[in-house]
Length: 361
Image 1 (cartoon, helix red, strand yellow):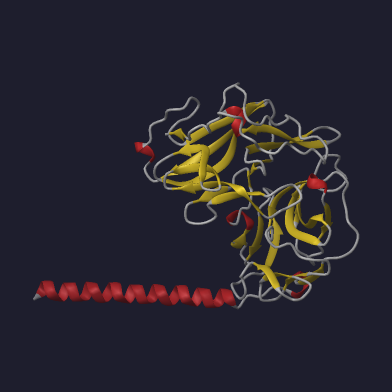
Image 2 (tube, rainbow, N blue to C red; image 1 turned 180 degrees about the vertical axis):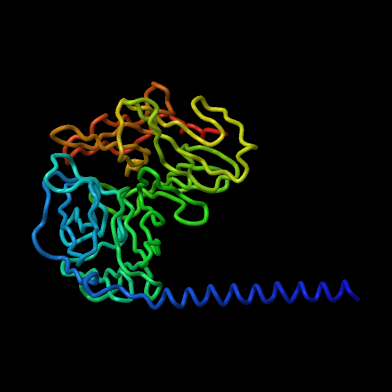
């Protein structure tokens, strides 16, 4: 009898605790949803006006966005509209700001598959939803953050564009919605934001035929549904692009593999351990870099070099050059990107060429 009473009391305690926790969480949510975006941070931007920049990737034109008192610029990253063909604008993040001599690169796009026309609008209202509408009023893209406690937006120092609440917590972030690029410190995750998709071409931002996908078997490069390379790792949960400063002027590009059972993973390729893949080493200590799936299907790493009088983005890594170990890769990229207008040849695998199998762990 005593045991039965104890069990009943215990059950009541946990039921009460669960009810209290649910009520508390719900109350907190209700409290958060009462927060609104201050009027001085709301805006309605119309895609029109003068273009900026001369040295821009894809020969694009771009415009900075007037966003009230929101800070959407954090050197070298900024939120902008750009277009590679007339009257087809993409809301994107540019890597490099005006007055620098180096080329501006595009590391993220909100509406790559659905560019908008001149006089389209980007609106950030008191409800906290960021909405891109075409000139006819059709909603092309949105953050879906209405009434979720958003009070402002900002560009983080690492290139992550975020909508945040009054405590600075991220309600929405571009890092969780990658396109063809991840920057230093950004991850791809099995449960969401799990792949990179190439552009169709320099002039066409729509999804191309190449992808880099994280699944339970690894981080794999595809052309349509055909495997072309990558890294096999059973139980993979996430992949992070990062770097490590080993010496004062030496930096290593890394892919960090987040595994469900890292102890069961045996390191096989040279330069790896159970969780890290060394991509390349460069003789420069830098802060900003990104890894991109190019329109020709190569996976390339770029570094932001800051000199005394100028800065530039340079390509320091290319998967298909590295994986052939000094052989004749199907495509050899330049070590320096050069000015806008450089057009790499279309990717063509030579006669008899067989794509390398993914590295195994």
